[in-house]
Length: 173
Image (cartoon, rainbow, N blue to C red; front, side, top):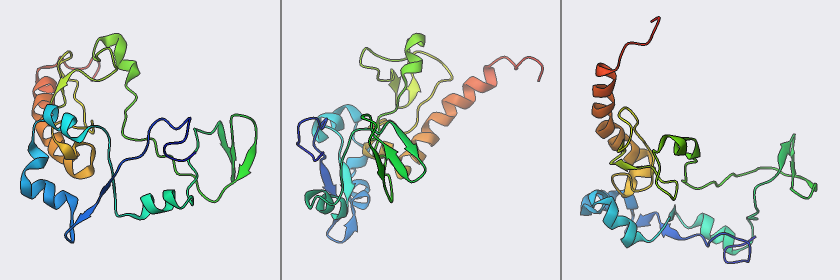
């Protein structure tokens, strides 16, 4: 499957990783864009972007990467597709995106109707002691990157530590 083909969920949107010889994260930090409110960023950016030096966009356009739906199984050096076809491969890249699967929290009431965590900056709005890290636009544009998740961890740790200090001691410990 290629971006835009029927059956492909949505086209890949690439954002150049380098601008004027500097990494995009430099510019996001320098301009302050990185710290704009997530509610604003979501509307401005308009969806998930893939930061790329140009390599991935080029090989997809050239047809050198094959995009396919999830395989049924991996068996040794072969991929087994849903129709039972086995194909020997050199490498498998699972490009799953940055969408966490948090369905197990639905029964707790921790998610909205779309399955998105109810939170403020990564601190659960429904359950004290529950925090999130790595959510897209959790607190900034960089929240779902290693650079941004570090800042978000520093932000949620105080709430988590406060909860742990007040939590009853675990039985038998």
